[in-house]
Length: 144
Length: 144
DNA sequence: TAGCAACTGTTGCTATGGCAACTATTGTTT
DNA sequence: AAACAATAGTTGCCATAGCAACAGTTGCTA
View (cartoon, rainbow over the protein chains, first blue to last red):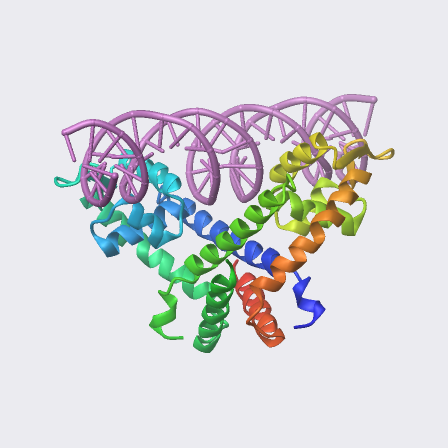
């Protein structure tokens, strides 16, 4: 490994790309009056796939801090999209699941997200996708 | 482009990798008592390279919102690492530059960052770096 | 079984991100 | 010159990120 790329701004590039993606998604949500944020969407998507999870699981699945989960869920509960349900056997645990309105929201926003993902990848191939995945996974694994 | 990767979580992977990187950097800074955040470091690095810039330029160079720049600079000024200087000809403009302490801080933290970058890339090649750069740049360019 | 460790989730605090509204200044137009 | 538009930066607001401290619950162990 040469000096060159060690000092090159990969951190910066990751950050800039992610910000642009997040921005584009948010503006599309706003323009279509979906009344959710990008991260709220990520939790909804996850809850749709897992049906019934705890804060802890959700945090692991989404790479988010558990405190962040706690607060985003609070917002989603206020919007009536998520329901909390106490575990009968372990009173520390709270199960989370989408309400019927939450499922509606998922179905409503899903195609928008699908289209946006297509746009981001429009000039790239499946091999590129595999490459990106491999490199990011490797970086992730390299970090202590 | 098939259905497969459109629905795959590249957004999530970017986010997760960046968070892990940021976290690792911050913990290293904290452990070595550098008394700065990752984003404060990014501004210091940029100011070191450009010597004398405005908020606007800094925002463009770092892909940050100008309001965010304004607030981070405020913190760096309080820490005595950055100095504000009004433009003589255009009184709207404020030039920013590192103080001697700011230059010290840059030199002090630089090698730490250099090592961390090496660690992130340790099992990857320069070709991988070029690939990542190409793919991220393409995604960036694809987004409206 | 009493005490302690581990676990689940919440709250407080500070930092960053982004939008809108604002002040102050400069440039343009009529 | 007066009115208006454009520019530079700040402040208010809300959302996300992460650390520390906390409360309540459960499990383990001496």
